[in-house]
Image 1: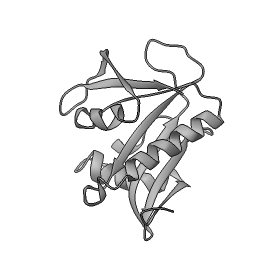
Image 2: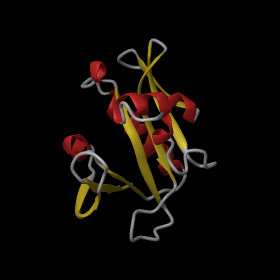
Image 3: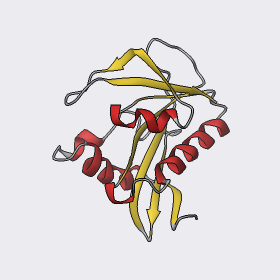
Length: 149
């Protein structure tokens, strides 16, 4: 534990409320159930500050679009509560996911980035693939980002 936070592997039910609160406010809880959430090799991490869930991230064994790379994994649902941002919790959540993927012999980690978070991910070594984007229901398209591990 550093900065008063611990990063722990948790059940998916622990991260879904934070996804709903931060990533999809006002939408039904069902919108925060991702395909693969319950897969045996999917892992969910929570950042806990004094017992309160303040951040989350999930990692899925899934190749990126237009790829059959069997050692690729997808990062999803990375978020922290606004009142704790800038304290390194998001970095630690992503690092926990990277460590897990490496332990599974994963060689590539990818995701669709929320545009305001692109710089955060670039600072962690991820690169944009601007020719591949995910069109979301609200807001601008999300660029695919990835990193070899």
